[in-house]
Image (spheres, rainbow, N blue to C red):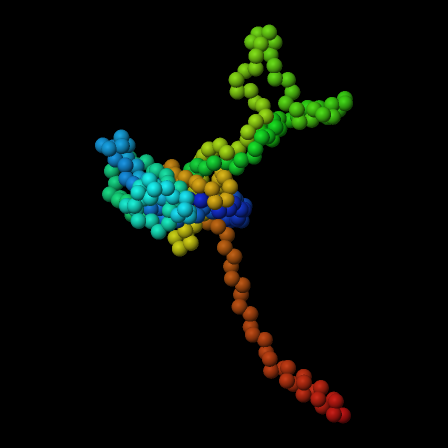
Amino acid sequence: MVSAFFGTKLDTESAFDDKGNQLVISRIKVEPLTVTQVKTGKKDGYQAVQCAIGSKSKKSLTKPQKQHLKGAKLPQPPRFLREIKLEEETQLKPGDQIKVTDVFQVGDQIKVTGTSKGRGFAGVIKRWGFAGGPRSHGQSDRERAPGSIGQRTDPGRVWKGKKMPGHFGTDIKTIQTLQVIAIDELKNLLTITGTIPGNRHSLLKITKTGPPKKPVKLWQDKPAPATKPTDTKTKPKKKAKLKKQLKK
């Protein structure tokens, strides 16, 4: 049984539930996955299905990749190839499609794994949340400095893992305790609670972690009451009165 799915991040925004409480929701583009390879325990040592995600230009496809994807009969080369591990043998074959409704339903508990945004070379305040140095007694150039990092004669070195400036972001992050709010099969949209890592259109792995619970219902505006049509018969009367006054 497949218990995971892949999609791309669309956006994150705030919304309200049916009780008026504010919450954060995220939308994920979940197009059907096409199986490109089935791995078995006898041949590969583990059971999994390899799936094609997204599409890209045919120019960037190599000859070995073309031969590998020949059995799936894809209209366009995939942007990503990822595996979903299985606990039991599957009857899926190359070319079969897996839809999001085959894996998830509204109310499912899930976790989302993705690559966080890259922020380049960052200092200790942005990277680790340091408070910075004092802003008085002439220390105008020490506000964002890390401070002392050394030791005494023993050990006479800087400990490994010391929090210092460096590359920040592009880490694999997993957000737990999320829930599926809505599934739009026509638009291939999955709406979930909470925030998720990564930039827009970045790859995400959605994994089921528990049985479905009572889903969160989003606020829906009630349609405005119908108004009575305005009476247009009074307009000609006003014009007739004006004509009489002008004649006099």
